[in-house]
Amino acid sequence: MNISMVGIDFHTAGIEEREKYALTKEQAVQLGTYFTGKRLADGCVILATCNRTEIWFSGLKGAPKEQFLCAVGGEEKSEHLFRERRGKEAIRYLMELGCGIHSQIFGEDQILAQMKQAMAMAREKNYIDPVLETLFRQAVTAAKKVKSSVRLTVRNQSVPMKALEVLSRIVPDLKGKHSLVIGNGEMGRMMAELLIKQGADVTMTLRQYKTFDAVIPEGAKVILYEERYDYLPKMDIVISATLSPHYTIKKEQLKAPEKRAIFIDLAVPRDMDPGIGAYPEVELYDMDRLGMTPRCDAKRLAKAERIMDACMEDFERWYACREVMPDIHYVGKQVGALTDAKLTRVYQAIPLYGEEEVKLRENVQRAVEKSLTRLILGMRERMDEKEFAVCLNALCESGKEF
Image 1: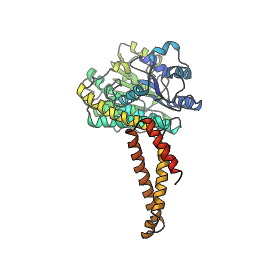
Image 2: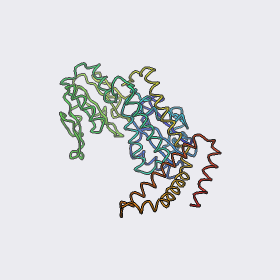
Image 3: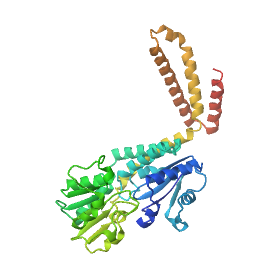
């Protein structure tokens, strides 16, 4: 199977290395259209999150790592930070990825939404192909089945929940704590909602051009993004979660906090200048310092693996059949048309007129086509590949005589 991927994540690289290869949505689209537009690959999906940057290929011409580094202008000394996976290894990894098994926060749920978004973006911009479309859809299905039947973690996990967990250990009582959340995206809103539930006094930043369409969690105050430095010195907690390629908090513009403050950076590339950690009053956390949650026990993991095995088999069957499906559909349509012709007198005897008759005939033909397709696919599983090819070819030739 000509399916491959190349990626950098927290397993092999620290945040300093990862942020060099972090991609905005615009950059991801440019990269996807580059690979397919130059016909370097049949299809492409780019998964860019706070903990990983991965490019998935179908029909790639060349080695994944070299193609990626060439496209983004990467450094040769960074090659050891990237991992390549091909064929069944890549497919299994994607199934596990959707379940949160390879996430920094084990079993977290956000990765599944991020996979869907990556697939939707690739579809919208037309750089995904049927192979990757089916693979990602099957991986999402596997993850949903696992999450509905296996409790991989004690509770649902996400980056904001992990941040709250860290905060709760440092500050056992968050009630009344002055908290500033920079960023009004999905992660920022989730963080604000979690803090509000804990009784914190939450303020969110909002860029002026978003004031009319922004969604602000109930109970949160709002200030303009440009005013953030005026409020920072009095904050107990500061959390930044934006997609900005630039720092939202720079050391040279930050006045020394008036009291102990917890700063949490939930972005890659980082939102907060690492230099602010030099202030004695500041305790700074980035994505790496948030750490991981414990893995689930072996029995639950084994159950999840059985579900993923079944989904892998479904995809492999589809992949093996995809090249012969046009011929199978051709035979089905020919038999459907023949059935329609043979039933002409039957239709005439039924008191149906106009659209009713047309609809009945279409449904009968469709049912015949689907039934025959299932029979031929079932035959394929029970026959030698060469024997099946001979039989399918004979059916196609016979169909031409109908």
